[in-house]
Image (cartoon, rainbow, N blue to C red; front, side, top):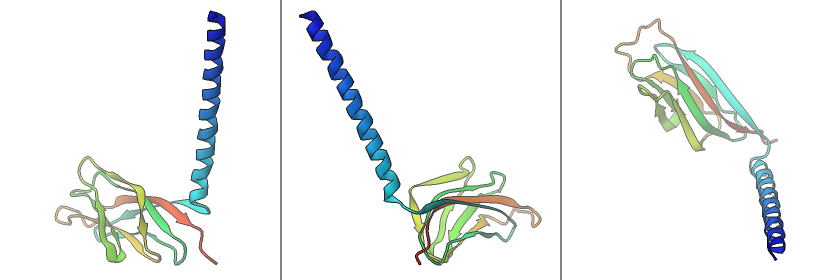
Length: 141
């Protein structure tokens, strides 16, 4: 009787293990289908006292901003601005990167600009890095 019970438990464990594996693989493939024809896009630039454009979204397709990072040496932080949106995020001491989950949709043909948050203590010859990452869908024909 004990052997029969042991065989039943082992069979049950093997069956539930295979169910979990099937569900994991099926759900994983569905994630890739939800955002077809998408390219991970990363852009970085050095910005000066006056700021500068780090990336301009394409005129077609969609851009989803997922991360913004800036130089920790910038006194007062760096602001990320997007066209008519205005300021999206600003780095502060101790927080040099922001992750947008699930992402922020940026309109087509919009310039993403990095600007020092304060210019009082910024040397006009200083430069700071600014990096963005996101997902760009394929342009529509």
